[in-house]
Length: 162
Image (cartoon, rainbow, N blue to C red):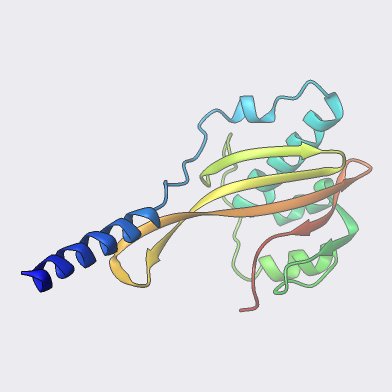
């Protein structure tokens, strides 16, 4: 009887621990206009610059537009891409082909935060659970940009070497 009780308690504790580690899904924000708004015109302009860069250059593959958005001396902090606007274009031209530019960012955008000369885009990313390949989970991805004289001068993200 005591052994059965211990097994039951063990199962309940395991279930509680498993549930305490469950996450809330990371959900995209559908109101892009609200995320782009700011009482500070400079912050609103910085947000719009990064937002349009993401739509036109990154998602739509119009790498010919990089001079409009990026400084020539652009600093890249992602370990897979070299520094410089030309290096950015060379890297992404290997797998980006121009397509029609969407009115909105197509990736599941969670937030846009601007402070000073920095803008951060946060996205929801879906992955397969390595412990259970039939299950999916979401997490966040961040891209941070530094703006200098109305152009993107530097970029960070959580990428690791591939």
